[in-house]
Amino acid sequence: MADEPRDDAAAPPRKRARQGDFWSTLGSPRKTLAPLVDQSELAFRLLCRRRGAELCSTPMIDAAKFVVDPTYRAAALEPDAGGPGDRPLIIQFQGRDAAALVAARGWRALPLYV
Image 1 (cartoon, rainbow, N blue to C red):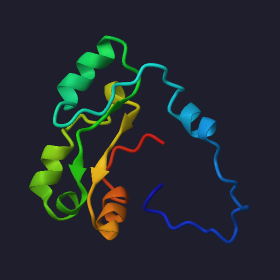
Image 2 (tube, rainbow, N blue to C red):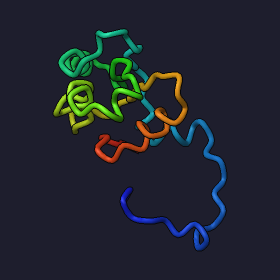
Image 3 (cartoon, one colour):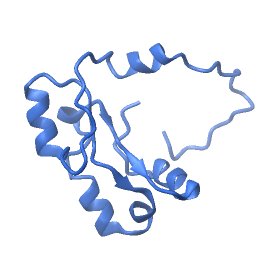
Image 4 (cartoon, rainbow, N blue to C red):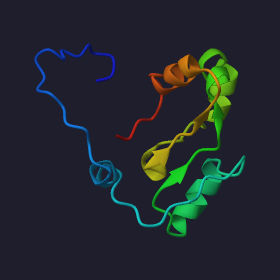
């Protein structure tokens, strides 16, 4: 689990994953919904999935606000985002501050697929 510390000393050295390996972990989708500015909320993604989209993404999420503002965080990730009917899902973060981007990526409540 993400909350458990990793014992990297005992783990064998990891090889860099090939692009095809990552793509296969997503189910090798052939039909993707292109990222849309403020138009790819959950309801629209679910509609597109019913019409054949196999991979969708969230609207752009401001990383700095996401990390510090619970109200923004709740609005950015709808309750069922990343649920069984909304996978695989690409969560898009934007921002200028690298530390905020890293913190947003490491947020424990994210519905991680991979």
